[in-house]
Length: 142
Image 1 (tube, rainbow, N blue to C red):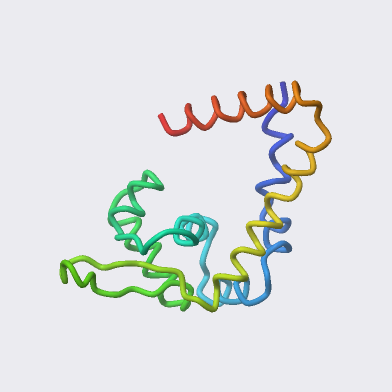
Image 2: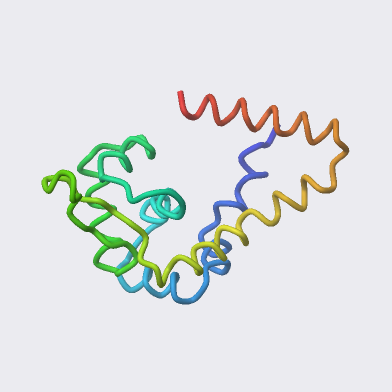
């Protein structure tokens, strides 16, 4: 079927880097942050701040790994950590406000090709594509 070659452009580092707004790209590069660090950010874009444990659960990674990722993002100034007022032993992680718009722009740029592709499909093709994508996500989540 050749699915991997079809998906390769979506994951290519240079292509992704070129879509990232300069402030976000520079902050990530200055601290040597990787796509693994970037995977945390969309989870912080909407909704309330998350604990490191919640981030670990969402990304299906260990707590120490989530803590390491959050630490790198915090050193870069991309996220803020604060004590949970309800439980001072817990740390809440939120997106630094100055990175909210650059992250929204980046996510919009990343999703544009998918939205254009969906617009070019017939309603039946779109329904089939979304059914397949939903099945794939369900499998990935386990």
